[in-house]
Image 1 (cartoon, rainbow, N blue to C red):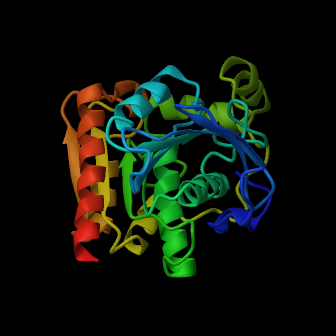
Image 2: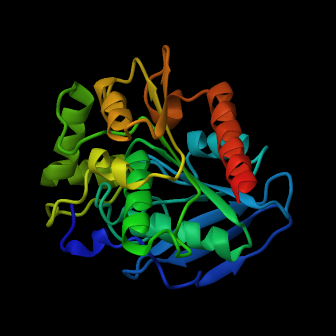
Length: 286
């Protein structure tokens, strides 16, 4: 859902335009490559001098101030620095949601901010729509720039992510498509879900998550999915893992539903451990 091809880019060359330091956390307004202001926050974690930062990408209708996003960020911050942000069209960020297309520019701005704060290793963790965004971002940054830009990442974790676009095989996804594609649905999105949605169809259609996965290697990739996900059944994570051809780790979580709301603290802790281990392994290899 975008009016042009800018979503195919994966970088942001503009630094934060505002920054407010505090003893525990910093807030910032980041500006993306296409000029959208993104509301972001930074928690330095247990070691302010630590090399690892986790960038958390929320799901559709989420935001950095939503309780489940804050809870996930709090668990991650026990092990590393954490950056949270609201995608365009969500919360205090500007712009309109393109439901996974130009959002790669929002993520790129957050990753670049992590680098500018001195973090040598950055791991992205995305939930649902955010999961599709972290996959596309890693693929585009790698394919377009050889992993050498400040938007590059050192590991990728996709939780409850779709494998393909335009999926309508479940009732929740049929409702979501109504919200996104119908004028009345977008009104419901704006006032009922606090999400401002772009009215135009994707043009061109962006690289799908399953098309993105083969372009991520050799960057470590973890795919996490619940076996009771009401939005995307388990053929989605299996398709993503198969596309990685052995280059991804797959966790199918028994009894888990969808995204941030369904990820309990124990699972979030294991995800943070994996992020830390992937960074430690990468450090040992360099």
